[in-house]
Length: 268
Image 1: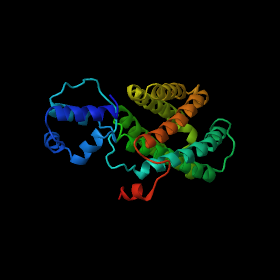
Image 2: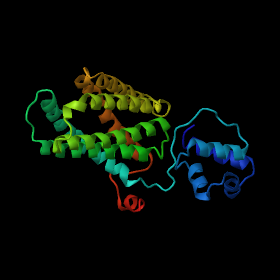
Image 3: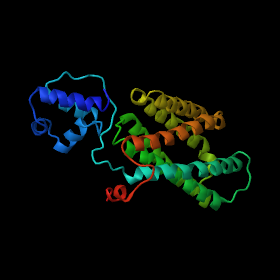
Image 4: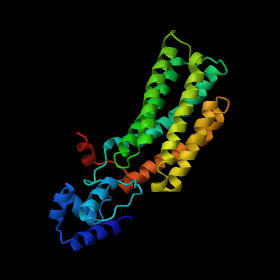
């Protein structure tokens, strides 16, 4: 059941039990403002909040898990807005990174290593910021598998950024020596990431399913090594869909198309 129907039902059930909002609050261990906003249809509570309210009202609990959100203060973490910007920094920087790295590793051409490293800083940094933004988004839409995948992906990015720095700025290692391992690792991470998005299918239907399937396909192709370049096609489509979904979810949880001072202040 979705809002505002859910809020109306809760209000009807509460009144049928002869309870005031204050009395229901005491049973649920919630605050009055939260109950007021739920009943008014202003917010959609998380599944565990719905379960608590229904238990307090003595109603039958739907065993089907619900992926929903609860944003009682209406503020969006500034990191989510920064993640959208980070994605576009990553997206354009990665284009130059991929072609430069291909020329260096596959064709043996001489590339200005410092310039390539600076491109990698923007590429890795933007992507890490995008992943952190998704973790912040999971505060509103919990998904354990996706959170684990995002955390591992962030760790992998830091590891390979460090290795790339050693390869490009020192003579400690050669980029080509670990390049196959790097490609395979990211392929595996993309596949796991895709499965995390597929887990949202019940909440977002085909939107999450398409993103997940494309990311899994890209991961398998990249992991294989021989299909790495071909895997860039579904990966690009999946990542564009991911940022589109993030922007959609910002508006879904009450945010604006751009951050304001309130969202910035709320983080500190």
